[in-house]
Amino acid sequence: MSERTPKSLAGRRQLIKLAGASLFLSVSPLPAVAASRSSGITAVRIWPAADYTRVTIEHAAPLKYAHFTVKDPDRLVVDLEGVEFNSVLESLASKVVADDPNIRRLRAGRYKPGVVRLVMELKNEANPQVFVLPPVGNYGHRLVLDVYPLNPQDPLLSLLDRGEPGTPVDGRAGGKADSRPEALAETRPEAKVEVRSEAKVETRSEAKFDARAELRGEHAGESRQLAKRPGRPVVDRLVTITLDPGHGGEDPGAVGRGGSYEKNVTLAVARRLRAKIESEPNMRAVLTRDSDYFVPLQARVQKARRIQSDLFVSIHADAFVRPDANGSSVFVLSESGASSSAARYLAQRENAADLIGGVNIDVKDPVLARTLLDLSQTATINDSLKLGKAVLGELGGINRLHKATVEQAGFAVLKAPDIPSILVETAFISNPEEEKRLNDDAYQDKIAEAILSGIRKYLAKNPPLAKSRLARLD
Image (cartoon, rainbow, N blue to C red; front, side):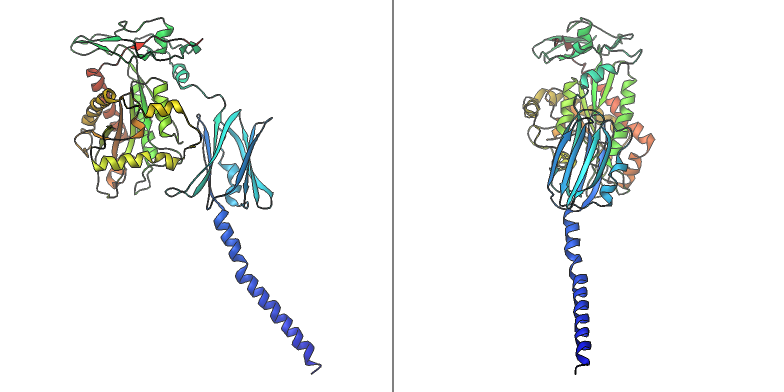
């Protein structure tokens, strides 16, 4: 008995160790896996642009964070709690491109147990905004770091600075751009102006301003005709058109079965259309975005109004649950409900872009809010219908029309109360055949040419308003 007891005790101890090890192996990893799934960082995306740069950190569950800024050099520091450093965070540094206008470099590392610190070195003084977004669509929880320049470029001055040698700035050859600060101005809506053509004379209110006209000392209503063409109204000044490539950045828009993103198609078509408009002697075009980044719907409207656009054209590529849906469409704003269930569905989907792209709801612009709530849009909607009809007719020459008439619905991006605005659905990216055509250079060029042709026809029958004199800001 005495000889077997030690062996027995040793055996028992060994069994206990094995059992404990077995228990550790079978139980311990589970909380670790659960913690990794609940608080782990799953993706990091960076969207650089001149307007601002966005960094999006996607995670499986809500996380606690704290942030602060540091000077000399300028840095944004963000501490993520309950997160372990992983390969996704390790890849942050490689995602910053050298020509990012706002971020010099970005790095992350384990600051202390359970806390990861992100340090963003900035190229200039910035106004960073840090906020969270709830899960939506295919995205989980997101922490968003938006880096805005402290002194952003004014869109009006940027437009004036774009003057090119030999480019007419007031509808006449030989004009020169002037980008002095006095170009900034306020609208005088009470001004009355005349727009003359060989066929008729029209008097209109709601005049808009022309920065260059003020700098030359010209008054509203002065005749500055380009060249008279028998039987055609004269467009006697430079026409500004805002082109709005739908979606962008975090918001891909519709995705075709072949993997095409709506945001890429719309930007390609908008760039082609801008080039064509800029080649016209009396037109210029501005894009709401010129690269792959997200622009809130209200900001698109705000930019168009800030530069006093004459027309607003939002470009999209439609999608539907059925792959056989096809054709081009044109939509305008409605004050009294959608013209069809399809129009209502599309408006709801397009208006959801802010949820997908991600808007910081803590930043409010009361002036813009009043603009978007403005209900006195009847005259503008009537002009939008005329523009939409002209463009739809031209699109019918290159593609089947989904609907033979212009449709209406409550699109947020069309709510500028003083700018005729249309939304063009070029084709159905959800239709495999049309998806291929949308990615074809020649077809994109046809779309751009058709839209421009429609704009020309609209302007021929509806000469733009003369612009009112500026009030200088001294």
